[in-house]
Image (cartoon, rainbow, N blue to C red; front, side, top):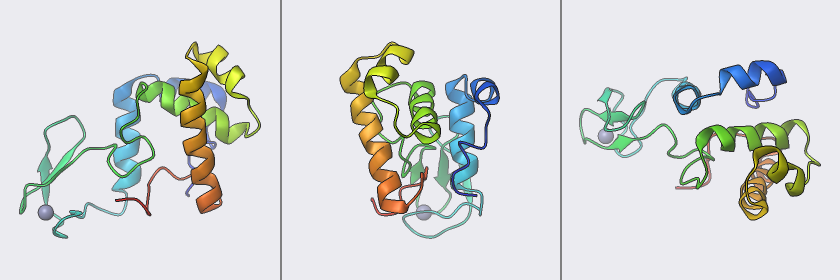
Length: 136
Ligand SMILES: [Zn+2]
């Protein structure tokens, strides 16, 4: 189940992703659903990392946040808003950045940039994916 975002109905989506914690939890679940493997050394044992939901390798101490290697990495906007944009773009691919900016009360440029990222991801993978496989 790759595009696990649009399986949510609008109301479900709102309650499932209304806080950063929920978004991070979701990303962590998605990312490590097949188990944790350290990106640096391949170790599968981890302990709690520096930030919430991050995981730290018990061998090399590499700390990976829940957003690292996902489309939300280094995202300039709030995670909940980023999720909302992703959700709207996935469920309504033709949605305009004007509509996004009006709905989220964000600058149009901000919405445009993130929408572009999502659209490119869909074009590259044929569907929306949280996890960036091509990027380091
Ligand atoms: Zn490691």
